[in-house]
Image 1 (cartoon, chains in turn green, blue):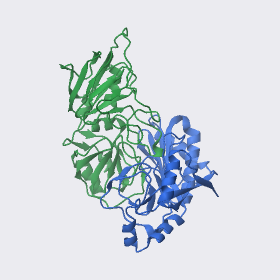
Image 2: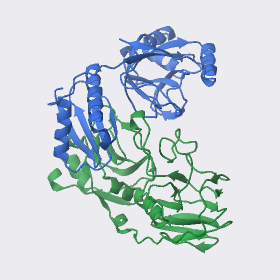
Image 3: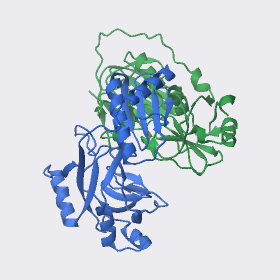
Image 4: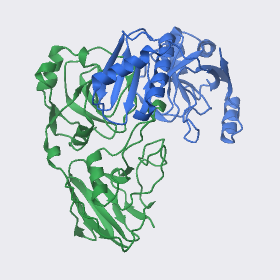
Length: 286
Length: 243
C-alpha cells in the first residue's frame, strides 16, 4: 500500500519536527527545514502538524499512488501535476490507485512539502522519522522504493481547515536575532558592518548550514569547542558567517555571534542562493 | 557551589546556557556534571535535555523561557545548593587500536614531522589515560583530554572526503575516534574495532562524560579477530571501575 517512487528528485527526504533530546550523544536535531510550511501541509490535510512529510528540494520527485489518499503540497510555489493536471499549493487533493504526482520543481523558495493523510510511516529512530545519515537507514528516498503510507477510509468526511498560509512572512529581507553567546567579543567595527551589510546566500547552502558571500572584518579568535543549535550564526576566522541549519552538528568551535529565532529559521531556509538579506540589529546593541 | 563566575545567557527562545569562567580541567568537569545532574533532577518536567561541554551547560526547555530573570535566579539557586562533586562510579575502558600502516594513514607523516619512530608514537598514544569531556561533532564522538604534548600536530590542510568508522586520529591537541564514517581533517594513526555508537543500545554511545579510557596496541590479526567477534556479539569489552 505504498507510494512508488518513479523519480526521487534532487534530494527528497522524509522529515518531521526533529529528533529532540539526543544532542548529548552527538545526534543532530534534523527535521523539516521550514517547519511552518511542513506543519501547514499537515494541518490542511487534517493531520496533527508534527507528522512526517516529504521534503522536496528544488527538483521534485515523481510518485505513483496505489490506493486512495488525500494529499497537500505546501510551499510558496511549485510546478507540479496530478496526471498532467496542474496542482496548486495549499490545496487538498484526492488521489486514487494509479494516480501519478509529478512535482517538477519548486518555483519559489528552496523547499516544499508533500503531506498525506496519517503521514508517511517510515521507520522511527529515537522518536523521529527525520532522515539523517548514520541514524536512519536512508538519507534520501530512492527510485523504485515504496514509501509506506495508510490508505484513506472511503467514507471519511472532508476536513475543511480554515487556517490560511501566511506568505507574507517569507517576503521579509531582514532577520531578527538574539545576540549570540560570543556577541560581546565583537568590536564596534564588526557590529557596524554586521548591521549595514547585505548578506548574499552562497550556493553551497544546504540542510547543515547556510553560508553567505560577504565577510565582516575577521577576528583571529577561536573559542573552545562548545554547544551550537540550529539558527546559531558562527563567525569563521576568515570573516565568513555560517548559519547552522537543521542537520547541523551539535558542537562547534567558532564564535557564536548571533542566534536566529526559531521561526526565522523557516524564513531563511526558503531564501535562495543569490538572494540577500540583512540582520536587523538594534542601534542600542552597537 | 560557588556561582559568582557563571555567565547565564538566553541562547535561543528555549535554550539557556551557563558558562563557567574558570580553567577547563577535571575539577571543572566534575562541577559541571554535578550541576547538570542537580538541575536535571529539579527541572526534568520542563526540559527536553541538558548537556555539558568543556565549560558550559546547555539547558533546553520544552517551552520558551518567558521570565528570564526569574529563571536565572532559580537556576543559580539550584547551583547554590549543589555540592561541588556528586560521587558516581567512573569507568575505565581499555580500547584496542591497531596502529598498522594499513589503517594508520598518516603515521609516517607524524613520525617524520615529530622525528620519532613508530614504537615511540604507539607508546606515547597508549601510555596516557584519557578523560571523556563530552560527546559532539558526530554521533558518539568523544572529546578527550590527555594527549601527550609530543603528539600535538595540526589538522590536514585538505580534509579527507571520508574517514572510516573506527579511525583513531590526532587533530591539534586532541585525539579521538570516528564512531561513524565521516569527512574529516584529523591525522589518522590507526583504527579501533570496538564500536562506540550503536542505536540498538539502551544509551546510543559507549562513552559518557567523565569516563576514562586507555588504548592498547593490537596487531592486524588481533584487530581482524576482534572485528569478527564484534560481528558475532562475542567480544568482551575490557573495563574496570576507576578510582
